Image 1 (tube, rainbow, N blue to C red):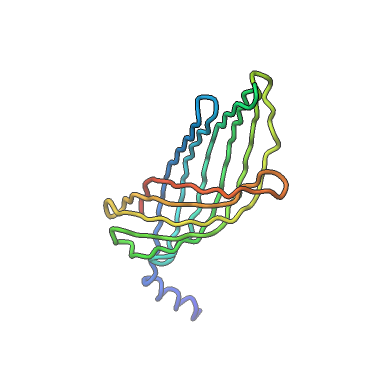
Image 2 (cartoon, rainbow, N blue to C red):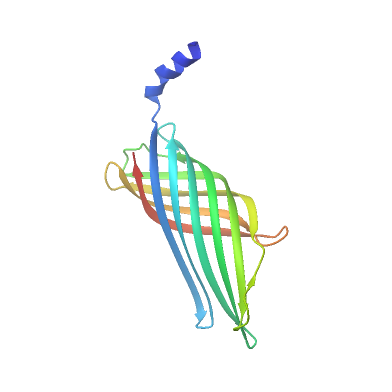
Length: 181
């Protein structure tokens, strides 16, 4: 009972609030009309702040990409669909009312990737999906536009499985908006 009373008295000192966010990323790399990569992703997130500067963020990212390569006389096209469900601990270096709010984050994510490969105009080959739990980390900043609306930019990094024990180091820059309730 004493613990409950202490928690209730300390609750006003804590800053319980929620932040909803959305971000978009697009990247295209072209070597020529036969060799390019085009990818885009959209992310939705919800952050639960327990203190003014500490939060748990849960996010969902839906990404897709097309890679086209001309090798020899054949045209290879790889379609990839990736879904990421993540959870990160966030530390913000400024108060919630500050105009500029830099932050760092780290955690993990479950990544599911499905690839389809087509050579020339032959039938498509659908590969077995890769599913893995991977570490993730990143950082970014928010710029307050109003009391509850922020412009948000972040850098995120993680490892993506590419079969067996092999992985790639992936990173992404995202921009979006967040709303504080």
